[in-house]
Image (cartoon, rainbow over all chains, first blue to last red; front, side):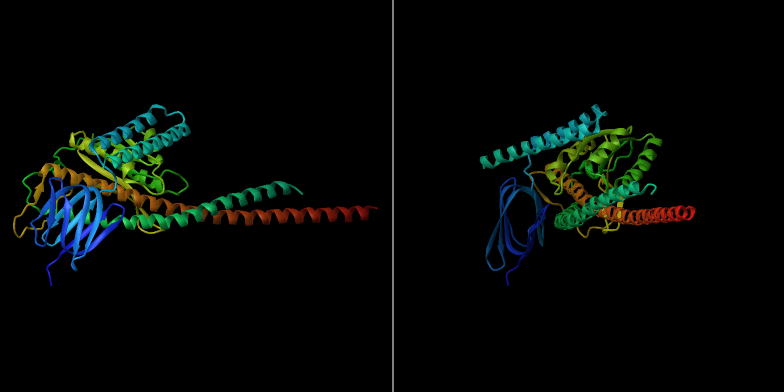
Length: 141
Length: 287
């Protein structure tokens, strides 16, 4: 029997893969990584790309991740995949929006219904902006 | 027949109320399943994330991330408060807020200031009225909260912690125990609690790509995000459970009220008939 390494791939919303593998290949930030059993402990960020898992019987499985974290322990490989498309400036924009929402709510304390409505609209606008951003990213790939 | 019509209208209106509460109860009963499924689906991520963080805490890192170092002085505390967007869910929000207020008062008595970010419309409305510093808010997460919607508020707090504007970060939410019980919970997110005294058999450290600062920063940020996301899901399940229970008791109360009112109505009707008969009899006797 060939030696194997346990491999877990999860995203915040679901478990994607779980099982034994001969080798796991992923796109790290610096370059392609091939993880074989008894690899030294390693931790890295993943770039958007595919994670290839070579199963015990030599079969290959592919998973697409849009970024995340890869952690290697001698007997375990863990891939924590991001579901949301992330970028530094996008995160920054989201933070600013959260602050603005709070400030706006504080500014007009008078009419609670108006605030609720304005916030609903703001949330919608945010969602649309994010969708646009995602589309733009997807086109770039 | 004194007030017969009024009682009848009253019965009608209570019946209508019962229809609404019944409907709400059933809607919540079906939504609770979905919320629980979401909660279960996100558990593997949280579990593996904790495992990785546990490994990191045990590793002999040459670099100490600010999130892992406890501050000596406590000047300002940040709270992330997860609440519901809608009401009619019993004492779910008020119980949580009451606990929070007690904690906040303790802090202010000791001269420690408090910053709050609100998740959910109820927390937003509540903290707006108080004299606390509301620094961010996210509302209307819907039935399927997305991490995207939470990134903003989390980043506000993490930035505040990194810049030293707050010295501790806490998370307040309702923990879903089961349908009947939801526990108001306040957890400490930052600084990360130190790893429990496992003595290392041998010293080891990770290979970091590209470097320890970048990677640890990334991992710890994701860790905090996953905790807040999990809290949002727990709170959602709690909301539906609490609403279901509240609406069930409201429906039961309405049924009871209808029974009492019907009894009063029938008695009034009977009294009126009796009175009429005795009047007729009295009239006949007089003739």
